[in-house]
Image (tube, rainbow, N blue to C red; front, side, top):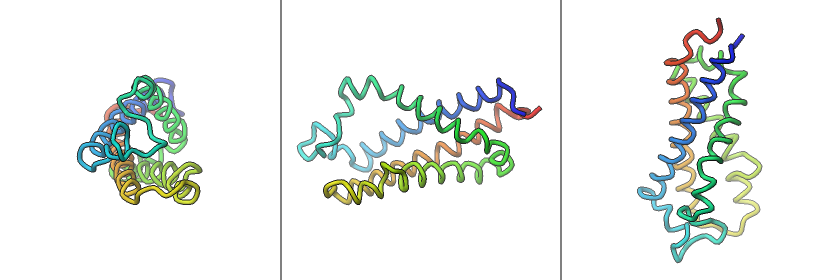
Length: 157
């Protein structure tokens, strides 16, 4: 049975690492992979994307990632023992893969839906976001398992 402290510590770790990895992957996508050309104020911006520096985006960025992290924590919590038994690398890889495939590629509003329902989007946008989300989810999985090893050694007592 998981005690309240360990559940809160787990959720806190997921939230913190969701925020950090989301921002880090976004910076990599913008500055290294060239995603900036798809966002305003670029003249080639996609019409459905907001300017990341706008007050609207800046106001909602962290609260949205806190909510996302809490949702991830809630979904992962029942599988926590299994993930811990798998260890940092395999457990982290499973977390990252689940979030990537279910949350981005196969999700109702994910990559497959974009290919079917959106007007044509440059293939390079898909490539960049694919790499961005893959980096983010794999780092998130690994860091969540690292956090678990460090902070919740005795959570089931």
